[in-house]
Image 1 (cartoon, rainbow, N blue to C red):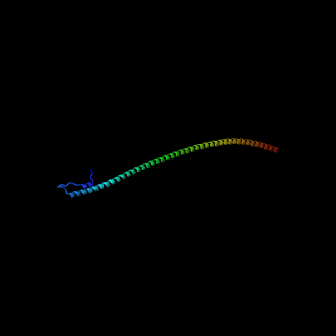
Image 2: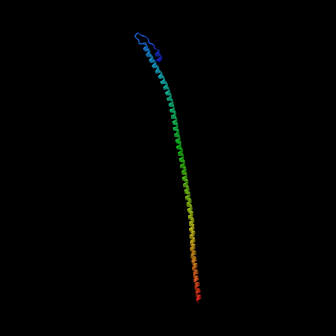
Image 3: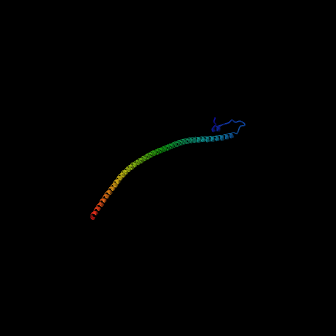
Length: 174
């Protein structure tokens, strides 16, 4: 059975010959009842405050859960974005590397083609020089032959002139 302040205030006791002073007992019961009432009011206020604090705690726990969920989502999104950025960067690097390799291969092929063209031109020039050399050597031989022929003609003419001069000189002396 639960005792309430009203029960204490209304409590009556039998009287006996040697009993307690009624007014004193009644006064004491009033103080106990008032104290109990104050304690009950305080208990009610504390229970109300406790309920209010529990509600606040639930709100804070819910807020914490939402904040954690938001944080987890942001962290997951940041991770996803970072992975996507890294993946994109790797793809761009690979693409740049492939393009660079293609440019190198193209440059190397162009260098080989130019080198081959230069060699072909050099062969053509050497062929032309050789041909010109042979032509010049033939012309030199022709010129030497002509020189010999001219010298021979000149010698013949000189000898003929000498002979003629001698004959003329013999004719004059006669």
